[in-house]
Length: 175
Figure 1 (cartoon, rainbow, N blue to C red):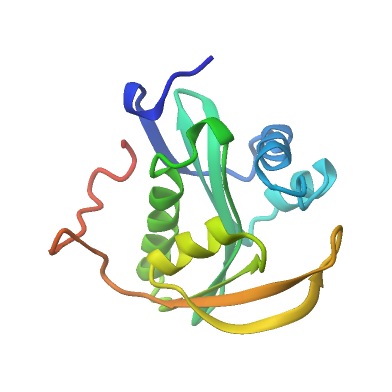
Figure 2 (cartoon, helix red, strand yellow; figure 1 turned 180 degrees about the vertical axis):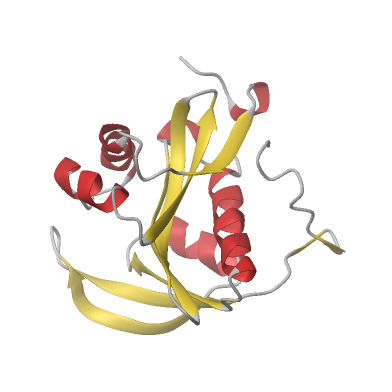
């Protein structure tokens, strides 16, 4: 079993749409989300093969421990999914994945990022609020299995500040 993140070298990299890791993506989602994976294995396979989407993965050596993915449009972006394997949650992996997605948006001159989250997912909502997302609307009964509202959130691109200094992303590929 892989040890805690502090004992391992984690890398964040762009996922290549030709890779065949859809089973691992599905397994992480199935184990990590309260209501199981929102997508089937086949949906992951189809989604990860799309060249119009961007995914970033967090890995220890070649072992996938988390990912973020979405679509970059002309003026804005949408995060479709972000998930970290249970054993690596609460260890900053999601924070670094989100930062890498935001960095990609800034490089494309995209300044607004949207996402949706289940109303009951307090941990995720808190995470997004801490990362300067704000609630823009509620979509009634958006989710199924079980039926639940979606909270739509957005974030304006900004240079992240950590401890009063501009964030340094130069070492982003090695955490």
